[in-house]
Structure formats: C-alpha cells, structure tokens
Image 1 (cartoon, rainbow, N blue to C red):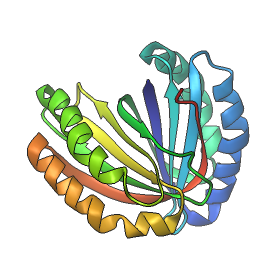
Image 2 (image 1 turned 90 degrees about the horizontal axis):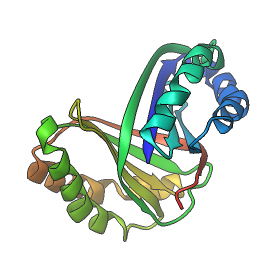
Image 3 (image 1 turned 180 degrees about the vertical axis):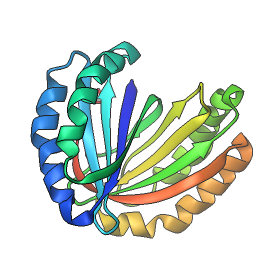
Image 4 (image 1 turned 30 degrees about the vertical axis):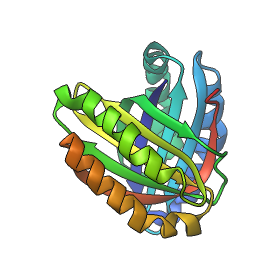
Length: 203
C-alpha cells in the first residue's frame, strides 16, 4: 500500500477545530476516492502539531486523490495551521498486532538514507526492529514508510495506550540504534503523538 502524510503545526488553542474538520469533512472527502483504505490522525496538543496518514491501495490511487485534497486541505486546517508539509510514501513494512485505540500513542522516527540503500533499510527494519518490538506490551502496529527516490523514511510504533508508549522508550532506543547502524541510515527526527483517530483496513 501507499501513504500520504500531512504534518501541520500551529496554535495549540486552535488544534481541536482542525481535528473536528479532519474527522468529519476530511474523512468524507477521502472515503469518496477510489482505492482509499483508511486514515489516522495523531496530535501533540502541547506543542500544536497534527500528523495525518491516509492509506491507499496503489500509488496511482494516492496520486489521483492528491488534487482534490490539495484544494480542500487549507480550509480543513484553518485557522489552526501555520505550516503544512505533505509527503508520499510506500508502506514497505506493516506489522499489525491490534487495533489502535483513541488515546493511544505513536512514536515517529524520521530517517534519511542513501537512495540505493532502500532495500537494505527495509530488510534491516524487518529483521532487527520488528522482532524486538512485537513483544513489547501494548504494541498495536509497527510500520516503515519509505520514499526510495529521496532517501527518506518514517518508522512508526503505535501503542494502545500512552503508558505503554512511554515504557517502550528504552527498548525502542536500543532497536533504533542497532537498525540504523546496520542500514547506514540517520535518525533526523523523533516525536511522540496521541492517537486521536485511527481506522485503516489492512486486510
């Protein structure tokens, strides 16, 4: 599958209005598009950040939805968003264990690597990170999204509650260090979010 992410930052006091728009009007728009497989909304209410991920059966379906969403995105995020960044990825690894719940937690690790090393990054993540993570209490899903052309990736660890997310930090730090060393990848960002909405059909 393929994923489009939207990363918006703004005034924390205005975040809830944007979330309401995304969960109503935004979801309706997405569900009308062919190849749509679901979406998630994650928030950092303290700093004023929203991360959304929409999932698509094919890269073509994702691209075909871009035009409609590009025209409506600003309106959905007003008046909250001061900055908006959109990116597209291949869902290279999706290891699903449980359905994520509202109020759960997401850890996002942003990666950079040499574009020819894309397969090495995928293989290393699957062999090193997934086995270490899947036994962690509360893990719902672990994913690796990559942009092979630009040499960028997002590793996501989704937990059923924020307590489990916090308890996993040491173990995931060890797995992250081992995997990036083997894959010759650099960590360029590390963030945690609350799960506000998550409904992705992975079957």
